[in-house]
Length: 183
Length: 193
Image (cartoon, rainbow over the protein chains, first blue to last red):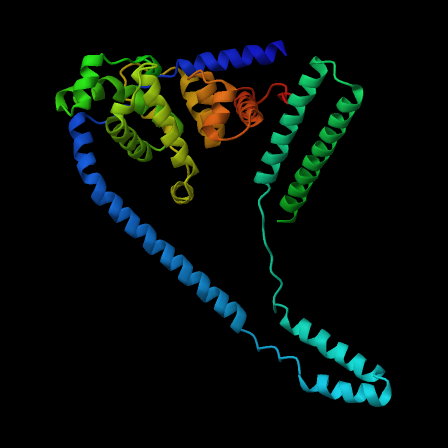
């Protein structure tokens, strides 16, 4: 703990002593020139961003249209069997027609599924940072509760929560390892 | 270089600047610009982006100079504006696209590009490089806490997050910098527990 504190103090001192000579700004005349040019530049950037947004939206719409319309369209569920079923049900108890109707519905549902499975790769950074933040929060609470001689039950609950968070973090890290190994 | 938070401007100059006198504005600019730009450059990294953020910050300074209530030195007020603009830049999706396209920040090049006559200290170059490896958020929290003297509560308020967020970001930055400086030593222990 002592070493950690010393390290932090040494680092803070080094950071404060870092030279800033490379960070010289431009002079007053250049500032004025840029200030006068700023409205035009802002308008140009806004125009470019709007153009980029339009392109992205168009591409998204096209991709969606291609995705939905590429394969053969699934047949609509037949309306006739429903009407026919009523007659069959009345006539023969409906067992065969119910099975047929369920079969048709299942086929219709299966045909509506995408032709290719969609794979979504999600980064773990956000999950890891959230878990670490939660662990830090629980640590803070634990320190506060212990300092205030809180009931052991409350401390136990916090410890359990912390253990669960750490376990989740370990699982995410393990999943990262597996994903790295499979690449 | 004087720290930005310590820079004060005489009332008379400030009033003249508020009235739109160019000479007074130029005086204020000369006084605060170096420290302001140095801070922005530290937080933003990329020089051209830092110049944009700096321009915004200085324009806001002159636009809102009448709102300055003199509760602290002008530099402290300006520092808040500068940090706020830096965070807006770091959070913007536009900046993330640029980082992807350009391959990251330039902070590591600061030490190598320094136009000073004296040779930079080796530990300063190492530290510049180590800082460049930090995520922008962790770097900003580290700088605000260790150099600018912000408290965790103030950092949390600036980011709109919890105090724990600030503490964990600082701990993460320390851990990474320590690993950078002690690659063959004992692995650093987690400071969260």
